[in-house]
Image 1 (cartoon, rainbow, N blue to C red):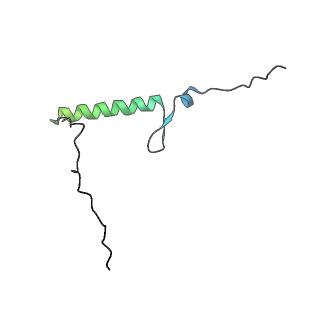
Image 2: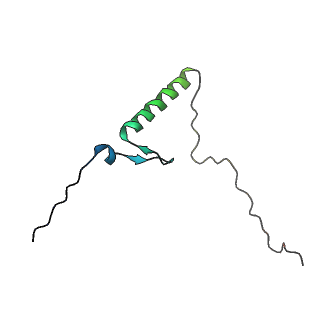
Length: 76
């Protein structure tokens, strides 16, 4: 018994597409344009006197807090 082959049309732009965090469809070309825009913005920032400061990986904004205990906090 021979199996029938189904015809599938392939769209390259659909295969290269992914979704970003906002739910928008992104293709390789739109990703490239976003990357180009970002590099242009960084170059303008640096040319206007801005500087990039690297932050340590283990730096935390909030120091750890002492755990709060509510044991026995109900009135008698």
